[in-house]
Length: 285
Image (tube, rainbow, N blue to C red; front, side, top):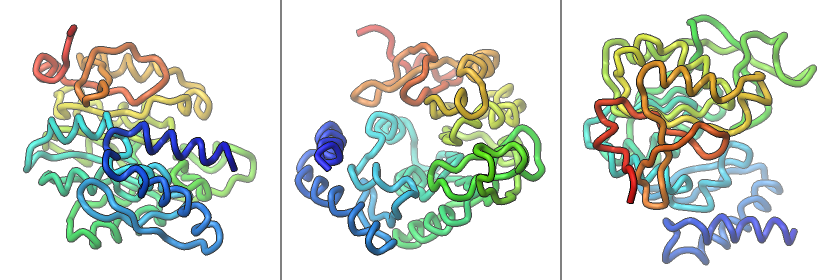
């Protein structure tokens, strides 16, 4: 219990976006897991652009902790995107990135294969009077069918077929698979966020035309240990795919400004099209 409280305090007080509401966020973050554990119910909280309904296990905790839960990453997007820009949210989950960026005046394609998460995404868009294009599929290297784990909440991940699912006997559900090339068609996106629990390489390999033509200005990719642990892939493979397309790797600093980086495991990595690197990446100082 003490460790749980300490964790909540660190999450709430370390986030600069919580200035002026840290006590309220702390109280909410402490009550939320108790309430949802007892009731199995939903919780409505606020984000920087409005309201969001969350549920325990659906990527909810970090949203309860802060108005901008991924403060550095979200600060970058709010500074870089302009009204009317197109953004692709791959692994949209319950929609915090989608909501934030749509409320910023952008058009969003939200890709989410998990039915329960997609329902909450639809609820949250309606709650805020917002609209986005929802693609009920996973992204991979080729179109077809895949198996998605079914009981891991926001940690659900795609595997090529049910026989390759993570733990023996782990429940899976069949989902449609498409590619980023097919989702975008001939359009150009200002940005894309790819959060697919280690499956990033397959998403990028299904975007060979898009990346080759550099029709996504900036990509944000989850960069933790999941690719290695679940699929035996090093992050260097994913980084090389981006570097082969001449994208420049960076990470946001405390103020949301991109700075050059090396692709070691850790916080999300941003890949910037070369035409934008001088404008968006701060070097030195």
